[in-house]
Length: 60
Image (cartoon, rainbow, N blue to C red; front, top):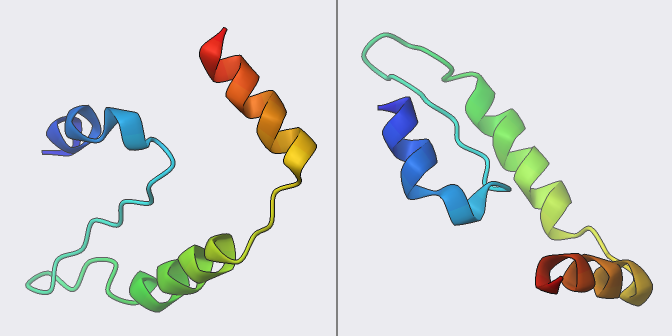
């Protein structure tokens, strides 16, 4: 399953994937931490010059 997820989301390598199981109680406590991490990333500012460099790297 993990390989399938990685293959399906190749273009979204930056996406956080948290595998959980309510049945086995696996990683349930990680949910709130992961939500906080995602929220922090949402508010991250990237400078114009850094963004331009990344775009150039993608197009070259």
